[in-house]
Length: 277
Image 1 (cartoon, rainbow, N blue to C red):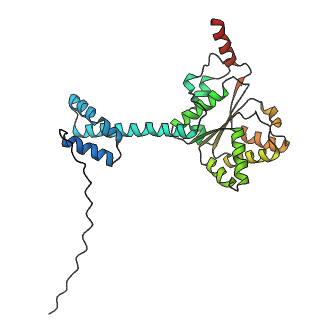
Image 2 (image 1 turned 90 degrees about the horizontal axis):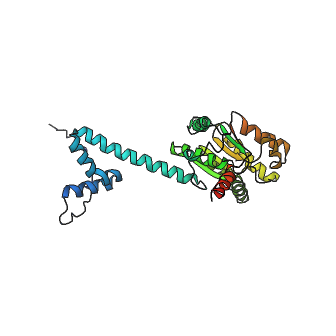
Image 3 (image 1 turned 180 degrees about the horizontal axis):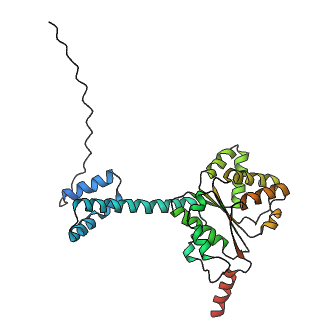
C-alpha cells in the first residue's frame, strides 16, 4: 500500500528585525525606541513632537485612538507645509512676493476681488491664460509672483521666468537638439509665469520658439504673462504680423486680463518717503 505525501509550502521569509541603536546611559529605552522608529519611518514631526503630544493627551484625557489621530494629523500637517515650501522654491521666483502684501489703495485699478479669485487654482486647472498689462512700477510682477505663489501653495507645479531668459534657453536647446525635451519640461508645469514680456524685440526665430511654448500649452496648461505694452503694441516684440496675431489670440482666448494702469505707484511711494524726510 502506497502513501502519498504532500510537500509543505516553503515558509515565508521572516522580516529582518530593525537594527536598534544603543540606548545611552540614563536614556529612557521607550524614548529611544520611538525616536528610532520615527527615523526609520521618516516621521520627523512625530519624532520631534511626540512628548508634547503625550502631555497634551494626558491633560485632555484623550483616548488612545484620539491620541493616535492627533499624532498622525501633526505629521500630515508638517508634510503639507514642507510640500508647499518645496513647490514655491521649485517655482524659481525672482523674489518673494505675496498677494496679501499688495497695496490696493496705492493702485485702485487692480480689483481685490479679481486677484483673490485668481489665487484659487480653478483657472489653472481649466488651462486659462492670465494677462497683466501696465506700465513699469504698477505692480505687475508683484501680482504675477504673488498669484503664482498662491497657486504653488495650493499644490500645483509653477515655473517663473522672464521672456528673455526663456527665449535664450529655447535657443540654446535648439542649437543642442534638446528643444523638444525643454518644451516638454515646461509643459509639465501647471502654471508658467512669464515676466517682462514686452521688454524685448524678438527676431523671427526667437518669436517662433516662444510660439511653440504657447501652442504646447493652449487650453491645456495655464500661462500668465506680465507685459508693459498693451496688446496693440505687441507687434514691436513679434514683428511677423501673422505670428503676433496668433500669439495674441492664444493669450487672450478665455483669458483673465488685469490692467494695472500707467501711473507708477512704486515711484509715488518712493517720492512720498523722501518728502516725509
